Image 1 (cartoon, rainbow, N blue to C red):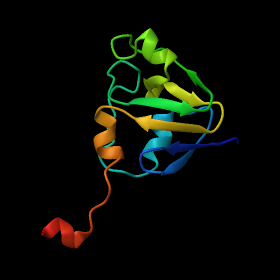
Image 2: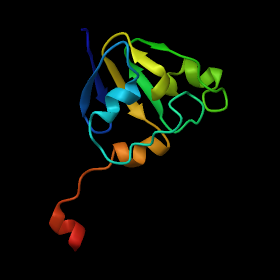
Image 3: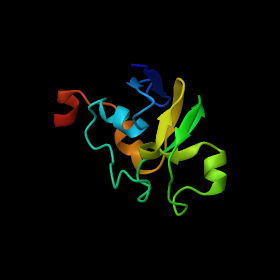
Image 4: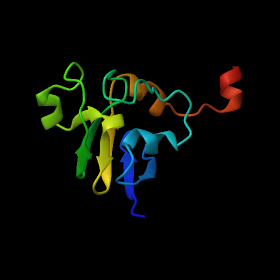
Length: 111
């Protein structure tokens, strides 16, 4: 099976994603707690990302959350984007809080 490498620019983390699965599914394999997952059908807008490099295929997304201008600029919903090459992306909105969170050392969390 073919897999593409997807890099999250803010954290430098990467994950593999096949052309048959959404970027959101691949992102969930990172194992981070709290990645916002809503309807998984492009209708709620919680998984908004901006693709900065690479090619991809999309499925239908709600225009309430992804305007034509957003789409032209690569601002899309991760649940509706499948990679067609290696991808670089930035997380937007509700996604950034949990995806870009850096783990705190146990001692610092108790202080």
